[in-house]
Length: 328
Image (cartoon, rainbow, N blue to C red; front, side, top):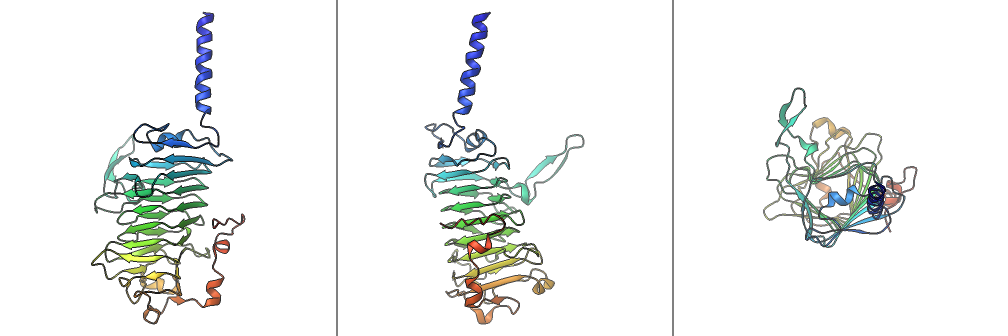
């Protein structure tokens, strides 16, 4: 009996130590080929301790990871870092018209809808992604989100976001996101939502004639989407693309110091609904390229002066109460 109790105690001790082996600031490794500590990213996320006060890195080796992931709100200070932006791929293929069953007592079948289609959903604060591809590779059968964010102080560096309609959904008002050196492609409204987001040195590719952004910025939010030093390009044959249309009345979008390709329509912006011409906040400054035609823009958009543009910096846009500034 004593030997049995001792064996149980030893087993529990080993299990506890194994659980705690990941509860430290060290990097943990994910690899599809089994050479890491985990074969799936979800398993690595599961071992992270809630509300960590240190920086945890999940290093993801090259490979294609077909996973539908959530980083829950009780996690923080996690960095998902890929081995190679082009070869470390997180992918899934849900779209808005996939049929799902909801309810238990009276189950009913209905379409999934836009907001359940994500490949990666980030509910947590203080999360960083580097050197990754986040993809929704669904066929064009409806809205299909690759990245869905709800957390605050999120950083995306050297990542690719690939989809068709609704590629990136920045889903929570007043949350702050920073994209640096990223590639984003899609068809319609492929960057949309209410968050405050700074895109620095990113490449934005339109795959069809449609709309790039659909901001739904709250009326009392000073800033929405800001694209600085970005390049707007298009797939061959695409030649009539709007910079954006306001999903809600006070949508805010600014392109400054950007290279706008010839696929951008001369009028630049669409009102979505006629009355939004009176409230939408659509701005440009110092853009270049064949798609930069300030004299032909809709009269309800605004070309900033140099003095106005100098006041728009990440430090000011992201200040809130914590003075967060993701710029190095």
